[in-house]
Length: 221
Image (cartoon, rainbow, N blue to C red):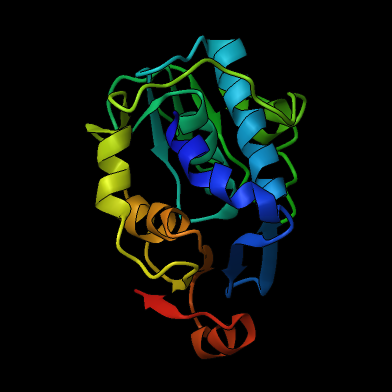
């Protein structure tokens, strides 16, 4: 079973439940994605990776993105396809923030709060949101063994084991960066392993207000 299936399958019975909420205090934006909506973005990402770049179990995919709801969709989609998420190095695709470059196939993620694209691919950099939104909302890929590399040299089974331990149903308020692997493990994977949810705050300035409004149960800084 892929890492994404292991994380999302237990949550599918409550598909309308908030899964990832992202605040950017610099712009005042708040975006909430349910389990169902996040699964749709992950499926689009997985389908795009498999159909366009032949990603399969163990294929390295580099993710150089800040903590953001779109980053969550990229990570879950990559794992659903069986990809091995790494921070750097040779990769079938490298995901970057707008304005950044990388060697090989480079996909820029808009990081727009409303999910708008970049207006098209240019200068050899793919407009990821613009392309991925055209792909299917469901993913029906092949099996991904637990021994498959999933995150910076850790297998699917190892990621799940390292991320275990939070209180069931935890709602995490996080200002932690999603570094690969530690930040991703603690701020995204661990809450989902516990059947919980994430409130991620970028450029934090109103953390106390968000804690009250979102009724979070654990701070992660």
